[in-house]
Length: 279
Image: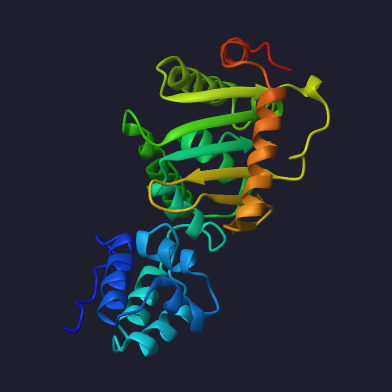
């Protein structure tokens, strides 16, 4: 096959790497399962790489170059694309999020990244990195707001967020910052761009008390679940595991306030912050 052209990491998403992988695999006369066998991964995993749903890891890129005779193409581009503005534990999830058709998220403590305002993100990063330079904080905020531009599309991804009541009550930044952040969420819900529910404190204990949960669906790939903790994150594609987390999300939704009740609460708490009534 002709030598593929190296991709420009500034303009070429990993979906292009996936397209090249599919082209090289088909030229070699291998099925997805046949390519996955020497890598000790499933054919569906190869399909996720080819669709751009999953990031190609360096260890697999090196082996794929050997199997398909692509002369280091995948290794070179894998190294180039590894340079990311996101933390290592979130890189793959952020890239999957960008091509997802549906995102369902439970947020236990913070406004989800896709819904954050500039002021909220800035206050959060500054408190979490008290000695960071202004430039570092600005770069973190810019990356966060860039993720939020996914919602500029009027129809997809479908975003359904369940916010623990703690998200509303824990003040991040000054009171006007919280008022703006909650009003932003309410506006998106009122414009029917997102579905928002609030899980009240009165709901008591539940299955997701140990961390956040994000479920992502795609047009041409299996769903994924992303679990995040303090400085850590894990992307899950095992069907049974994803199904378990899917059930968890639905149980949270069943115990949460309705979208109408949730919107009223978000608006009410926003007004409390605006008028300094929130304790």
